[in-house]
Image (tube, rainbow, N blue to C red):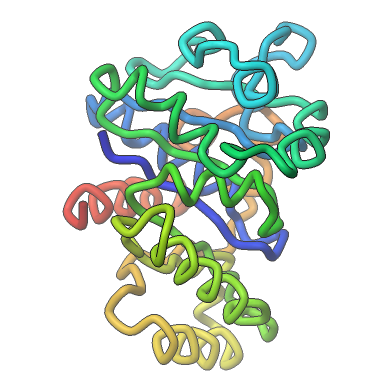
Length: 251
């Protein structure tokens, strides 16, 4: 089972958009895929289900010990399943602080489903707190979305330092799957300069696929759809399907 954490402590970099559409593309490719929403904003969750229809979430799993299998729900995409979130997850950090297994809760609960899925995609909050650390400890691979903007690499040192700390003890097998350039506008000199800066930091770990700035990608969450159902002929759909192909090749 390949477990991919999608993380960046910066907000607005296309992290949730990437989690939703990569997971959807994997399901469409016939891969048994579980999307785990670890963001208290629950944007991945509300793309697939009505918030009021969710009564058990990742909070109950990580805080109260409920089996992960007890909250997994199917989505409208064949072979794609969801472990939902809601705002109560914001209380999890305080609950786990001081717990001897606080960093390992997600890793432990994923053991029970390791034979049921080919891929697990984890959407994390825009922070490097205990929730994100749980994702990094549980993951086999890390995907970092990086916005094509002037402040793209702001905070990257902190993220890379956190990755090194995770690798040094709790998860030495964690691999950097790649850095994904998002919200890119190839027409501007700034975007081209930022692309070069990202390549300088991540080298050959930068995905060849680049996610362009797209009105369709921005609109699809408001309609509670993936890009593949909302605008299947759009550049965003093409780019995320290409990303899916590249991810499968890299793992």
